[in-house]
Image (cartoon, rainbow, N blue to C red; front, side, top):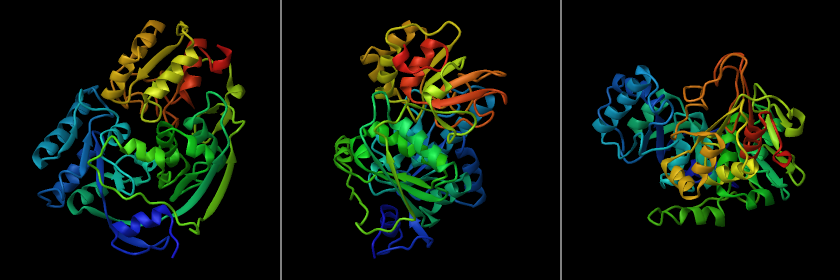
Length: 419
């Protein structure tokens, strides 16, 4: 029986030769992710279950990243609950402020995920790790407590849709633009409870950074997971972790897909997602000139070194507009150090930006960059729902780092070629 990557991963983890789409299976998980905002509820459920220990303290990752550094007493208590649980259970992979980063960058960069894995996390953007050829998906805090205890969960094996992306994108266009464009075509429920499998010449040539961004955004089309079949680029990334043993999985030639979409991005213009949905996609030229009060550059979607280099290139040595704030958020301590070594921290600060610690704060409207009434932001984050980033009347436009850099200089949404 022919199988997609998703089917193969579920079959292996359920101890079966093959699985059918729609089939309910109990599958063992390779890694479970929790953060400061989701772990406390899981700890409460874990206690109520009467559990005394976790199934494997090396297969759980707990990351302080959402409300850190703690913005108030409540945030501090959330972190404390997770910290004490990690100590009690002997969780090996516990990441504290100052030795941490944003979870979806941290896990692959620390060698905690690998091709062929089945990964769950109490965060919707856990689908990021599909860039490595894993099946990675978000779960709720109650399910996380069960997974901590049992080391397995039940799943309904999803259908897979295949997205063939071909063409050589124009300058400045990257993974974020491709993601927004595809989500704009599919809609926020266009891939509901499906796996999105990306292929084609564009994906073959897309950097791992771009692939992480693409899979991170799969949830914004309603997908259960985003997956890129592992290839030589995947292998190069995994060379940093020679101790890891894994078996890459690729789809069978005659695997069945519930739908196949073809996209040519040879002439794709830079994309912006207008308020209040990631699917509200438009070419940047359509919204050029919109006054912007705050630009946020970073997050798990576009917070790697290549993203900051692209933004700095788009800024062309100019100063941030006097009426606009530019907040730069490295996605991990390692990325922060890379930026320092590359001179980018100096570049951004001298331009008039503030460079903050690794945190999800501005992305979730938690702290370190909340929008006031009627303020407009342009963010390289992944979601722009009503009120997510501040006041209910505020507006957020999503874009890639090139548009973010240009917008910070212009004080209005701009194309980098116009700077």
